[in-house]
Image 1 (cartoon, helix red, strand yellow):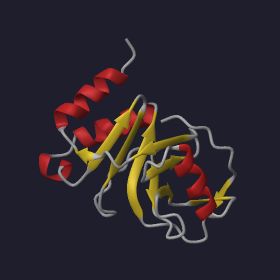
Image 2 (tube, helix red, strand yellow; image 1 turned 30 degrees about the vertical axis):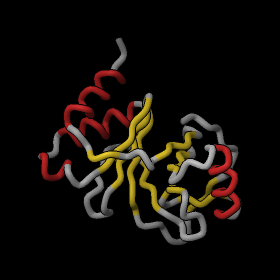
Image 3 (cartoon, one colour; image 1 turned 120 degrees about the vertical axis):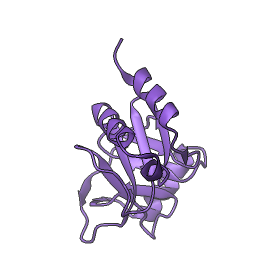
Amino acid sequence: MDTATALLWSPRAEPLPALAVAGVGPVALGLARRVLGEDDTRLGHWRGVAGAGVLVLLGDPDTLPWAEGVLYLGRDARAPALLLPCTLAPDVAPALLERALVSRAGGTTPLAVLPRSGQLVPVGPARPLSREALRAWCARQEPP
């Protein structure tokens, strides 16, 4: 999942509608704990994918959870295979960025682009959230 990207990002003129929320490191744990506090009905609104120190949840914009430090991601019509930060735009044409990142990821799409950590997270494997799986993921993220 780790892929350094040397891009400059600037504020978007118009934010993208949020389709996903992501956290890295302690923010990912905070997001997971926030989600675990929700009831099962609310949990059922989201799909997720997680790895070492990273959590990405997908869902309807009105249902996405909030936690301090999270990054909301959306789809730019010019780069539909990527989930990009809702409020940041890359310093290159989105279509060119998409082509480069999809190639780097071996054709796996869609990809969540996390600029601060330089990570690309394949979100195609996202599955409905399971409270048990999320608890187990949290336990694996805690320092020994």
